[in-house]
Image 1: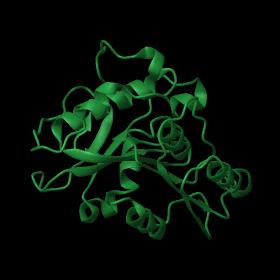
Image 2: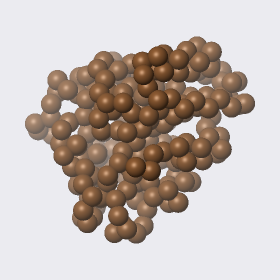
Image 3: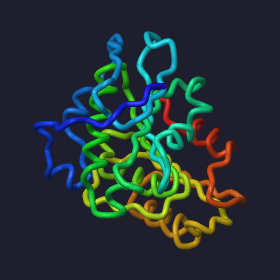
Image 4: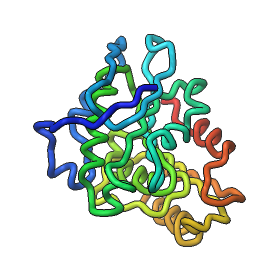
Length: 233
């Protein structure tokens, strides 16, 4: 479960795309299903990863996991860690550059660039044929935003207690799983998911929505349901 540090300056990144939340073509071109070529992933990237063994048993589903405001990469990773081995999920949990994700404070920028670099390195090291993105709270809002923006890369989005989705552009048609506690006092359900889900369905997205009795949290049962929901193909 290596932690990866901060990168140095990168060259050739499409800044105009990052400003709209779009990940680079480099990431899409790195998707492959051949034999794994494992590296130590020491490129200075702010992320935690979990890679189930054995590595040579075929391609993984990669799941990007985004922490909540004031949280850590480890908290993001732990969202799906209990089910990662049984479902053969390669988990990647980046750390936000600030207290929360860039689009929430100042617009797309450093966190999109970070994620792009992280994914490029991980995809170059491990065989991956499918990708999802998910998160909790502010991380769920950011996962929805990036997932809808990059729906031609991510086939599914897991949003645990999101507040909003704010894509500037949309691509593809990822499947969406949202959950929310009916007693959430941080992001109240009535002004968050109960408004957001109808809007997403009205826009044509395939949405699975789970409400539960509880607060601002991700119960174990919701994690199991989200894991079982992930597309096999």
